[in-house]
Image 1 (cartoon, one colour):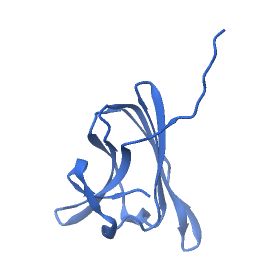
Image 2 (image 1 turned 90 degrees about the vertical axis):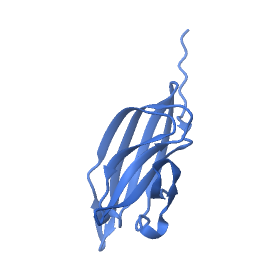
Image 3 (image 1 turned 90 degrees about the horizontal axis):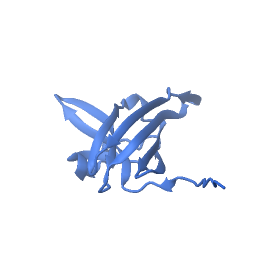
Image 4 (image 1 turned 30 degrees about the vertical axis):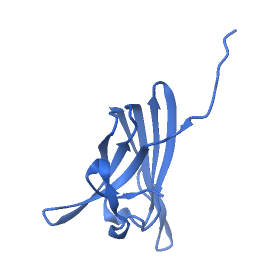
Length: 135
């Protein structure tokens, strides 16, 4: 008989989401990047992002954005989106699903309110820039 094996997805390793900071022409630009620090490419990448939380006591939620990317090479990064300081007071959540050699992995990356700040910037080698890592 044919048996189906159902299991939870594997824990994502060496794949992360970073908010990069740069100054361009005197403007402060924050952008969200996916980093693949594995020695192999990752495939069929789905990223679902949204912001939620409270603002002055009121529940607030941004629209949910879904993005699909066929693959991301080993030891490389890609920009997901630009992010505006107007949402830094919210939880900014990124749900990530991808495959390596047919196995599915997933990860939830959350930037908690007020964590995306210049004080929290650290050098991100892969981006050759400074960025904020998720909690």
